[in-house]
Length: 491
Image (cartoon, rainbow, N blue to C red):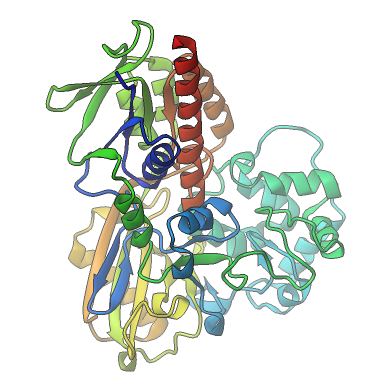
């Protein structure tokens, strides 16, 4: 009998794994099980009267290869869209006012000194403190530290609170006082060790046309452009929304048996299709049992923990120690005539110190053209971060009221939107807090004791779409290797 592979979780990681398996070995029996009513996970795109509304992520990093790479494989390369170069500005809130984000940021760290000297976001004393990074020696002791501790130590508290922390909020919706430097931005520590500091690392990058910047590892040439096929834009999307990726993967899943609305409640060792010491049995909420030679759990860490609790209590405990934060997005649409302030940029981010419930606001139709019909604007607010999730318990009316109040304060919009969409994401953002790499080491050690069991998704080594795609594809390659070895042993 042909061995069967079961993938639990129909988000982008599970879909990417199923696609890779089906493409590489069409003869393998593949089953994809999703507890919800649709595939795609946090990728949700709605198209309403010419508006393109994203419920979850709206773009992905262009220089992380597996996002654009998968789009190319799916025939979507000509659908990729860069951010709008005509509105290439973003803002940071300070004291209720918007200050332009200094140009030349490579991830979290300034790489151009002129814009930082001119910005009103950082005080003169804050700029002087940032400059001390050039003279401060590297930290001598090894080991991890909180991201906030590292940035404060190198660049000062003001740069952290007014610039770096709001950028972190936009990525992780997390607390930099708890996030692990080595699990989030290990390149920053590497720059400190290799060059003696962050400013020295930036100067070294400027001297070498092919030197990697010390944050995300993006390669730049002397003109500052990168190798992205979308005009050097750091972020890209699909013209009709990220749902195009999900739709293309679904269209190419002809060899995959997909079960929607099906919840797995338990995983145990052993399968009637494999020897007694191999394979896995999955128990569904209905009581039905399924058997697999190889199993990929592409589910949130806390869900994976519940599934393997009987199989490996130690691994389950470690998985449960990966914390999550909850978020929501509220998209609103207006005629441009109802917006007193011109949307001349991509939007703004809000430092935690401002004490506001909204952590960021994207002027979607300004950032990505064609997201709204001519003469209209689409705006999206992000709500909720670590320690502030209580606002997500509010009613839809209250959430909308919160966003309307925000837009009235910042953009002067006093009229109700012509339509709105609210998406709640409970326990959706994994937090790579201190100790995360130690937790990963335990999980990987325990997985090694269970041949044929794999995990993938945002909980482990990257929360972005390209990271999740890569995690699913890596798991798929490992499954293929296992099945090849099993076949060779039988023959």
